[in-house]
Length: 224
Image (cartoon, rainbow, N blue to C red; front, side):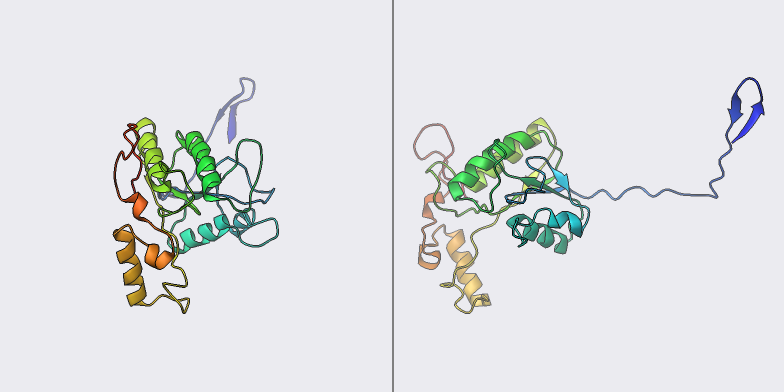
């Protein structure tokens, strides 16, 4: 930068870029992982973008063991996700948990989904919540809860989709601990027929897709 006018304070800038070209940032979908950890270093109820392994350690349990969140982060990265955010569940009082019952998780997710409705994200993943979870009220289902959040988030802010799984196979399904193809086939067949009682030890038939089973104008038993 050179001064052309000593007394007027006017300068002329000359920039030499040597044909520098700036690449556009790679735009990948934001994967938002929602779960719980009792680690006091983890940001609470505030989406946090994961930048490296040091960030993952913030979401381990206070004991130093991996939490459901840190495990999910590593699985998402292994699957190719490179734009990951984390949201730690709470009840608004600052309480942190290492684990949650299904009913308490459902209540905490209700709060989280409300807070996140106008947050920009593409893929929402509630960790530890399963389509065939038991212990919820008759008109509650993690899958419908997530679908409802995605609907309202898409309608009011930006397009988003949800990812949710089913309970892992029990030892009844896979006695060796590693399911064979035949065992996996039996498990999938039971899930798609909404009846896992013979395999998982708990009935899945209450989520058979009936929209309004008690005529209160609220969808009750959506599953897939």
